Image (cartoon, rainbow, N blue to C red; front, side):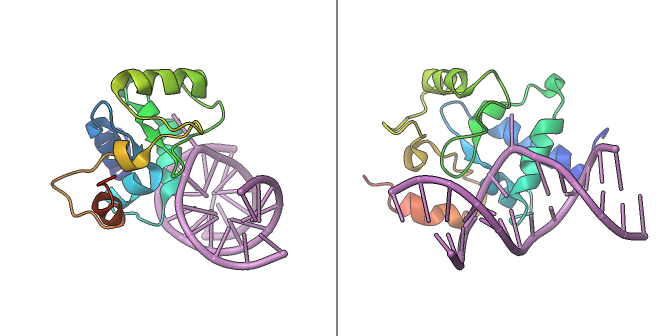
Length: 121
DNA sequence: GTGATGACGTCTT
DNA sequence: CAAGACGCCATCA
């Protein structure tokens, strides 16, 4: 591996995010075994080579938003792209995480557990 | 090896 | 209700 194992794992997890779903930095951090290191995810994304074609636009912060203008070409473009993929956006411009947050089935979910429980909107 | 940084998260003013 | 400060961990200088 040309990169750190941690980075490799982060890229792997991000690459697993299906279309129409989004994952939070904290969630990914948790999946890679570093629940206290959401920043690392952002760092990894920043350092992520375009060759991997990581769906960074599917990775958002806990609010369902992301950096003001650090990637892709603007939140506007990202929002449009996510909408095209089927991600639900709220009127406030944030993603409806309750509906669109990615839930890895084969993994034990903790923080998302409550979210899933309340999913019956 | 030490210090500073960051695409976050959560608590406290 | 909104903004600011602190904390977290790995990487960069």
